[in-house]
Length: 532
Image (cartoon, rainbow, N blue to C red; front, side, top):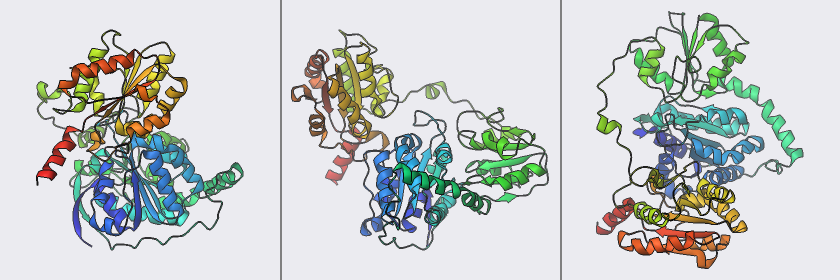
C-alpha cells in the first residue's frame, strides 16, 4: 500500500494491476491510451506475465478480453468512445453470454471533441446492453471502482463498464493503493453452452439478464458511490453525475446549501432520485455528455411535474464538456471571465510536425491529381487528416476508421473516377482491410495510398499491427502485384513519386501505393536511444 500521484487513466490501470488482472486489451485512442501504456511500462506486470500487447482494433480487443474472462481470469479492455462503436457487437452480446472472470470495459468519452469526431455518451451503450456502469468522480474513486467493478462482475457474471471522460483521464491527483490481489486461477464455465449464442440458448441467457436488473438496481441504491447529502435550501435539488459533482463542490467551498445526490454507479438509484424530488421544488441535473439521466427522469418520477433543469432546457449547454463556470451559471452564481484569448492563438490551426512523411505524400498527390481536378480524395482517422487544412487542402472526407477506402469505392461506383483513398498503416489494419477486399473483388477503379509511418502516430507512437506486413497483407487480399507500388516520401523523390501516383490514377482498376517513411517523432526517439 502506497500513495501515488496518478492520472485518472493511470489510476484505473493501477487499480487493475492491484485487483489481479491477467490481461489488458486495447487499441490506442485518446483519452484512453494511458491505461494500457501504464500497464505496459509496469515492471511487476511484465514479471507476472500480464498480457498487454495492443490489439488490431477495439473489436478484437473486446473479444480477446471476453476470451480471457471465459477462462476464469480477470481482464480489462480499454477504448475511447468511438472505439466502442467498433467493439459494439462483442460488447452487446457479452451482456447475453455473461462473463467468467471479472471483466471491465473501460471507455473514455471525449465531450467537446478535443480529439474525436463526435462526443457520444457511452452510458447509452451500457443502458442499451443492460449492463452496470461505474463513473468515477475522482482519481481515487477510479482506482477503488476497479476493485468494485471486478467484484460486481464476478458476483453477477456480467461485464461492467467503467466510464471516464477526458478531464478525469488527463488530470492528476493523489491515490492511496490497496493490498495487491493474486490473479484468478484458470476456470472454465460451469455451463459449457454459456457462450454459445444459438437462438435457443441466447433467449434463455437474455431472460437471465433481465432477471438480474432488479439486483443491479439494488446494488446502486446501496452503493457508497451514490451518496446523498442533505441541504438546508430545498428550493433546488442537485443530481450530479461523476465528475460533475466536483464542479458543484468547487462553487460552494464552504458547503453546498442544496440537497445533492451524487450518482457514480448505474443503473441510476431510482428510490434515491424519488426521495430527492419529493423534498425539493426543482431539480438540476448535471451530467457530462448527453442528457441520459435527465431524459429518463420523467419516466423514473412517474410524470411528477417538478421542474427539471439541465441540458434539455438550456440551463446547461447542449454540447461540450462541463466546467465549474458552466455549473456556476446553472446554479445562478455570478462568474468572472478572464482576458480574451489573443486572436493569433485562438485562430491558430493544428499542423503536421516539421519533417512529417505525410507532407511529402500530399505534395506528390496534389501534383498527380492536377489533370483530374479536386474533390475526389477520401481520407481517414490519423495525423494525415490535417491534409484537409492549408496549405494542402488535399482531402475531402474524414468520417471514421477505415471509411476512406469504402467511401472511395462508393464514389467510384457512382462514376467519380479515379477516386483516391488515403489511409494510415495502423488504421488500415484496424478497419481498412475489409474495404480493400470489397474493392479487389469488384476491381474498383480506386487508388489506395497507405501512408505508412510505421507506427500509430496520432496517439503517441504505439506499435502498429501492420509493421513489416503491409505488402504481404495487400497481396493476400488480392491486390495485383504489378499495381502494388512503393514510394519513399522525400522532397528529392517528388518527381518520381508523382509519376508513380499518376500511373496508378490512370489504371482502371484497384491499386495500392505504400508511401513509407518512419514517423519523425519516433525517428527522433529511436535516434536518442541509439545515441545514449
